[in-house]
Image (cartoon, rainbow, N blue to C red; front, side, top):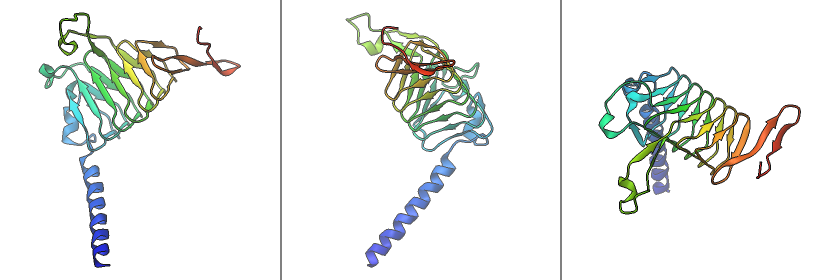
Length: 214
């Protein structure tokens, strides 16, 4: 009985300590770490623990936005780590980005207002080349293409958005979908690998399926 009581008290203490650590470790607009960002809006927060915060001077976060724990936000190349300037990554107002979100930008990633995501979503504007079969792919020159995600969209768990993708407003990206350079119209649902439009909103008809060959 004594051992059980000790373990219960110790467990309660650990949970209380962790709750305090996560609260104090979160980055908010008045946190010293937030000053390194291009902008960090009122009411916004990056939860603790963060996996990677890199190139903060080229990252702009709007107002009332929450970024979940284990986030990786990276802007620019290692040689640009301490540089400030126009944002490479912009995250709008009132966004809720899930646990393990990864946003890796080198040229331009624009995430609009009121974007929500599931966990472990990944967004990048850069891929390595692979044309030279004599060189490892990891050392071949990269190619950047801007990415944008329109206001009010939702990205499901594990979705991936790759360079050149332009996602419109009020778009659903299904869980596990890979948007590979697709220009997605407003008011649609995309799913699959690679993703394609599977539903669209039609005035007077509502949400209707899109044939595979459309």
